[in-house]
Amino acid sequence: MRDLELPGRSLAISRNAMAATSHPASTLAALDIMKAGGNAIDAAIAACAVQCVVEAGSTGIGGDCFVLHSRGGSTDVIAYNGSGRTPAAATLDWYEKAGITTLERHSPHVVTVPGAIDAWTRLNKDHGRLPLSEILASAIAYARDGYALTPRVAYDLAAQRDLLIQDPNAAATFLVGGQAPPAGTVQRQPALAETFEAIGREGRDAFYRGEIAREMVDYLKAAGGLHTLDDFAAAEGEYVKPISASFRGRTVYECPPNGQGVIALLIMKILERFQPKGGPLAVENLHIELEATRLAYAARDRFLADPSKAEVPVEHLLSDKLADELAGMIDPQRALDPLPAIPGGAEHKDTVYISVVDKDRNAVSFINSIFSPYGSGLMTKKSGVLFHNRGQSFVLKQGHPNAIAPRKRPMHTIIPGMLAENGRVVMPFGVMGGHYQAMGHAHFLAKLFDHGLDLQEAIDLPRLFPLPGTNTVETESRLRDSVGAALTARGFDVQPPKSPMGGAQAIWIDWEKGTLTGGSDPRKDGCALGY
Image (cartoon, rainbow, N blue to C red; front, side, top):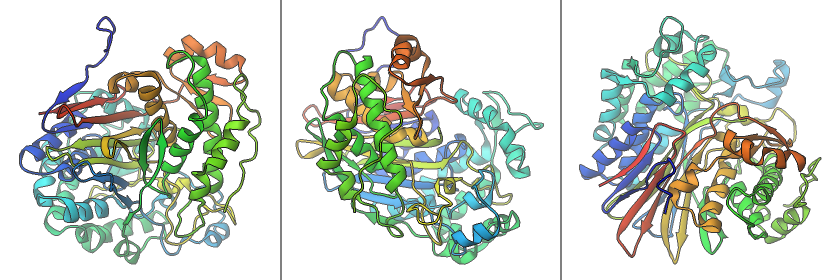
């Protein structure tokens, strides 16, 4: 039990249903939908739609979506990949001839066709109960009538002022007199409200065909993009088979590549080769976590790509052989410098993660992202679509598996997680924060099962993250104070994070007691609530 003398959130506990999100309005929207007869899928979509309005710097309909869904607690987990593809004209040769050597954030070339609306409409049609118009009603009301900026949203907005000022539509929507407004300011997005209404009436075609699609294509083309109406009309996500691995006697499910869920599982497999020593923040344990992460991310950057366009050796990445080899490279006393080559086989960003469990114990792990805070900063005027910058994950290098190519999906950082034990799903969970997410999954589960922390305690713990390909470790202040010197002595370059390190939500299903327990990250504005 949490020490009552220490500050911190209490766990949320309920009997019937629960939602955990990074914004209070989103959590309430999910609960309202379930009280109205909707299920966990409906509630997650409603929650995400609200966040596309009230937490626009973290997510939007101009982004992508990945989902894991358990029906009634079954381990026959459904996975959906709602990530978008590049335009058909996006060949590596075109970029070389155009003299483009880097994919800049504020550029149409980092905008793949958004996949979120495809995912929402498909999942609602196949697994939901309520009509999309009812599910989107709260988001429409917030966009049209107004919402007040919460503290973390205002912080992110201020940090991205210089990006948003570059686009007249984004500046007019989010800034006041060219400056970021403070928390408590009321904002409105009437153009986005009309787009949501159209999607509620007409479904996915309202977004990928017709007037809204035409405006998005015209806007991106005017900025120099390669997008066409055919690219938007062809947009389609897919159901995929989840991947899984055991961790401390439980089964962890992740979405397969092009997402980095396989890297979260690889980190866990490496950690299983070590026994924890001391407390959850003991430098000995943190050292192993850092090195496992550095090695696994090196494997990510070598292998991970769109499996429909490149060979991604998932079996190799999940093999005991690779985990044994990588674990054997770790010196428990000293950071690896430089990192060794990864055996072959066949920065912080923004996102929202939503965890929902309904009264029938349908469990949904739902993540929706525009990548960097406020994405590319590019925004249409009439439809109010803020585009992501996910294409920055591509590589402009011939022969690399993640090289940009026509109708290709980039390597994705966003990963929903699902945990099972004793043959039933017990926890949808997720961690926000771009590249941090794979380490975040492993870090969170290790604190639960190696050290016996509850959900909220594990979420509250201070974090650290090794920047991929370096020995630099971004470390929150509480950890810098307690173990910073020890990590430096071991060869790590300890630095403060450039921005708040992610966020997390989780809901635990207690099948014996018939209760739900939820936790939500204090680094964000949200909460876990149930009824």
